[in-house]
Image (cartoon, rainbow, N blue to C red; front, side):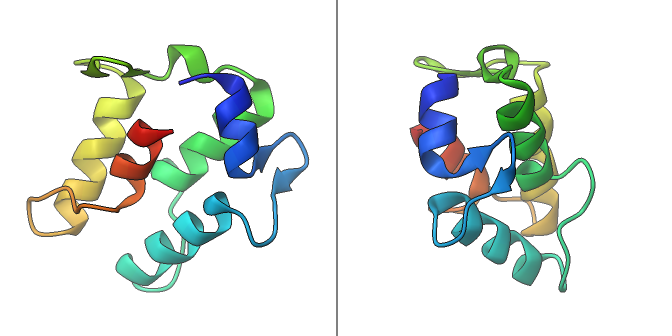
Amino acid sequence: MSDRNVHKAGFTTSGIQRDSLASQMMSQEAKSSGGGVLSGGPTATLQEKGATCSTHSSGFTSSGISAGSKAAEMMSWESKSHGGETPRGGTTATCQSI
């Protein structure tokens, strides 16, 4: 995942941009977790990566999510919050597509 694409999605050094893909992801995650975005969750992690310009090491690659990476942790977290499945169009799937 390139830093440029993460910034284009709305994860920036000054926070999540209004009306961006990032804000939609944050809203979806808040709804699925009962009203808040958890520290260490997918949206918070991506914002951290966008703010520090270090997305290249997060584990989202052109051949899929790298085992043992932060992306794999995000996928696991999202799967647990959705009854064992990673939802199509969810945060992890959207991040992988970016």
